[in-house]
Amino acid sequence: MIDLSESTRRVAAVVRGVTDDQLGSPTPCGAMPVGLLLAHLHGLSIAFRDAARKIDGPTTRTPPDPGRLELSEQWRELIPARLGELAAAWNETGAWTGTTAAGGVSLSAEEAGLVALDEVVLHGWDLAVATGQDYDVEPDALLAVEAFCASIPDEPDARNGLFGPRVAVGEDASRFDHVLGLAGRDPRWRPPEGGRR
Image 1: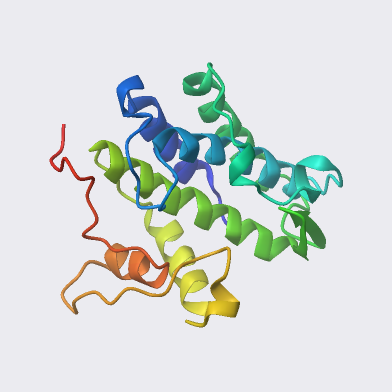
Image 2: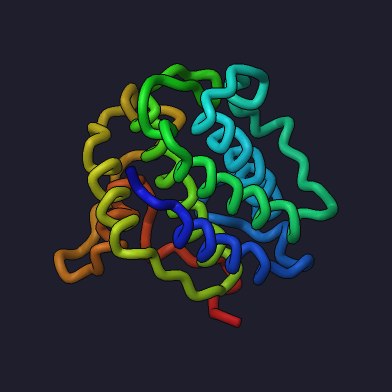
């Protein structure tokens, strides 16, 4: 069992730091600009919150569809609230035991919890680097995400829909940069305009 509270708190702070004029800005997630990534984070927070509670319904059984993502006008308040609910749900008794579903996929509750943490931590970086914000990962969360990312083989069939191909980073890179590489992200990625605000 892993406490997602600190990770969700840090990502919520990044969400609140996004400005309206950045919603169309590119992110490390290919064709998904900041606004759509925020919408994705909102949706996954609900899906994995309900997965922790073993709710079997549309929020857990519907596969993600990037073409249907829409960002709520109240995103700056709603996403942090849903992130908080996500963390609270995974701290409830029984959340990490048994089986559940998320994104239309049945899986063990333990695996679902790790996927939830992985999504929150990595998308926190995606948003932060895309919008010029500082971002640090809580140490225990980093260890868990590192183990999860390392467990996914660097083969297209295993990574399809989850990660791109692994990205090589230098031996002197930080631990988090190595994790980003394992997750198919280039730690050196910056938006075209570059710089930090």
